[in-house]
Amino acid sequence: MSPLLIAAGIGYILGALPFGYVIARAHGVNIFEVGSKNPGATNVLRVLGKGPGYLAFALDAVKGILATGWPLWFIAPESITSAQIVGLVAAIIGHSFSCFTRFKGGKGVATVAGAFLVMSPWAVLVGFLCWVATFYTTRYVSLASIVAAIALPVSSALLHQPWPVIAMISMIAVFVIYRHRGNIVRLCKGTENKFVRKNAEAK
Image 1 (cartoon, rainbow, N blue to C red):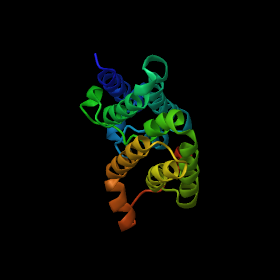
Image 2: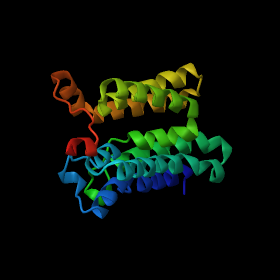
Image 3: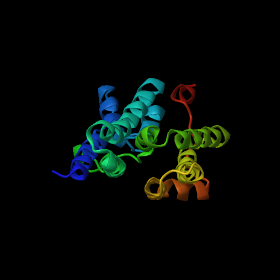
Image 4: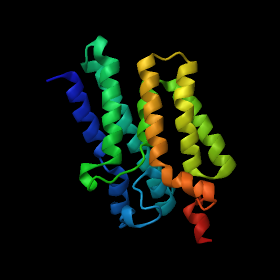
């Protein structure tokens, strides 16, 4: 079987693992029915607090790490980059349209971050710093994610990454921004919810 087909299959299955949904279910919550109704780490954090939220983010990031990390050991050197690209794209599709949750899913930010910890760690550092700066300035997770998505291909180009990687990051950035289209509309209207910690809401 073609290494790229294997990468696609492994990537999709990894991405489709609905960690946010499972974690919320373990706490007696259907994450698709509360908050933003999104199974991503941000909604888990907002609804259930730091522990479950950070765990969901870490596990979603691990999906990206595994989808792009395994070819380093099991794929011929000349095919590693192609297998990583295919695996990451498949993981994002799986995360966003999981076969385990009726093809509903998150927006893929944590999975992308995990993948590029393997493929382009310095670009991830730049994206992370942009995310942190935007979030703590505005308290909008969605805006921070959009800014980080834009920063990844820009920083990858400035760091002289191979052009296939830059092209892939650019396409993924467009996809992530598209997945945030509802958030963008609310940001423009001034109706987007700012992040508030669960314990702060209870006061």
